[in-house]
Image (cartoon, rainbow, N blue to C red; front, side):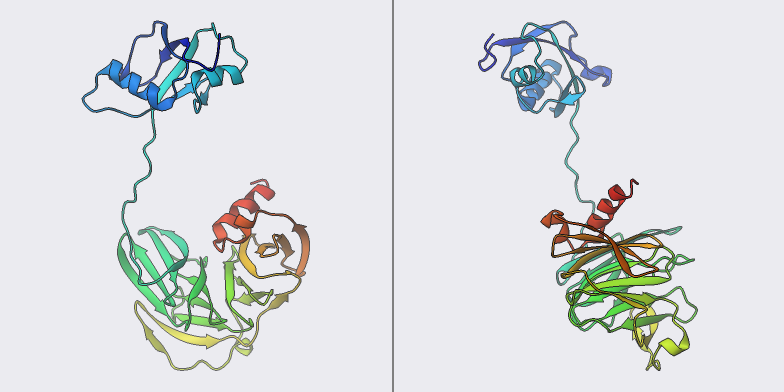
Length: 320
């Protein structure tokens, strides 16, 4: 039988859908060049539904993404064989439930979960960090003087919206609302845009990566000797923060070789960075040493400034 023409294939249509979707389970002959869309139209005509439904089709547990003839040829099955096809309702494309417009580009997003529900934070090119529940803006953190490039949630012992942010203004900010006296710690040791940021799972440290090819580690609980004199308290929408300048970072990691586009901190002692040199590096936090370098990583991953993409790769590398 010529698999490339319109020769018929004998099939049996099966489904586990409710009764109204059942068609005959007797073998029927259909054109072998039918694909998913045509098969879906065929099932709808057999069912005579009030409104047509989109269907997907599985053969041997695999979704049918070619004609029946092509599938049979790929599987080296006989053209005379009766093929059992299972049909299911096709999944509809996801539809956005709500839209949260911003006045400028959104560069980064982070999520928070608490007894009060889920909250997302957005970092924007207008230099603002905003917190949202649904379409309602709950708070706005202001202080950066240029666009925000990256944000990350900061673990804490309460449901407070603690977050860390990186900016083109060459600084990082650690926003701490979980304290009885809310404050923002400011680190300014990068020479150029701070492109990426991540928080240690314990919440004790923050890592930042920049266009200067450096990674800095910062304490979220600095001693008095590690901070400069706090200056005047400034009113922020949703919070009253005391701005505290950090004198220096805890450590500086060199040898990243390029702009540090993304950071992931999956375990207390392990930090990962992704650079514009197509490399992912694993760092030992205690020794500040690069203990592993993975080269030739996809440029699409490396260029992503979203830590989620790097985190997924890290989970694969760690076997999690």
